[in-house]
Image 1 (cartoon, one colour):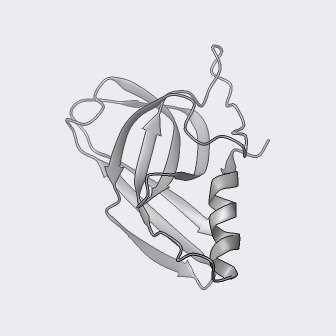
Image 2 (cartoon, helix red, strand yellow):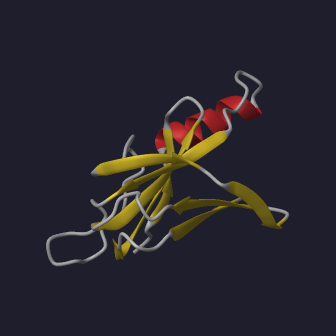
Length: 126
């Protein structure tokens, strides 16, 4: 099962930018949610037509990005101790400066305690 997709909206923006119709909006942040698993804890595959997370809880501006290879951009975002304490995070998405979710990743639930930070990374590979 593939648990990472670029949304239709994200791909549309890439196509339009390559044609020169628009300037591609930069990635601004990550959205966090708890809708990436079913009732039994099985990871659900995101659907490319999704324009949002299944159950978004919080958005935060990314800490930064790096290029681990010529064709990969790694985005990183850290949740502070007081952000989403006591929640089970199982989906994240990158959103651009227009507020649109451009990619979604689902995974097994990660419990967020109130006494620790959690850092999430998404590799955008081309």
